[in-house]
Image (cartoon, rainbow, N blue to C red; front, side, top):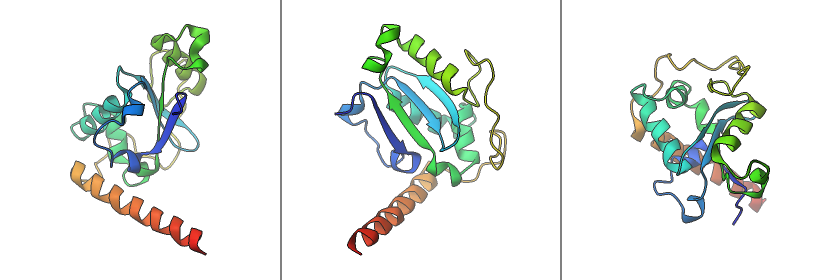
Length: 163
């Protein structure tokens, strides 16, 4: 088990309904793409909190969730990064979840974090703001899109492996 972190594409995350046992210790999470971190947060169970963002986004209860919905299908390629404040990388802050979260926010300057973020990164061009019109009708539509994308990605991987 890698107690440091887990990285997973949002499309693959959407296909996991129950938190895997070896992810239950993760209490920090990031939403990001290749170039920028959008949001950093903490929760007793980071997996569940990421789901809360996604579910709350449809009704506007989560800015990060709403951002995902407004930027679908591009956002299905976002990376969800799960970390543990109790890992060795945070020993220097005595594994305090608040201090670890603050450090990550200060380090990455996420677009949507306000607290502990002196200069949030500007949203890259090409992304819609969280107040834009939603791109999909409901969670089932997102999951269906994610399933198709993962299947296509896996088929391409195996086709390359066989040649």
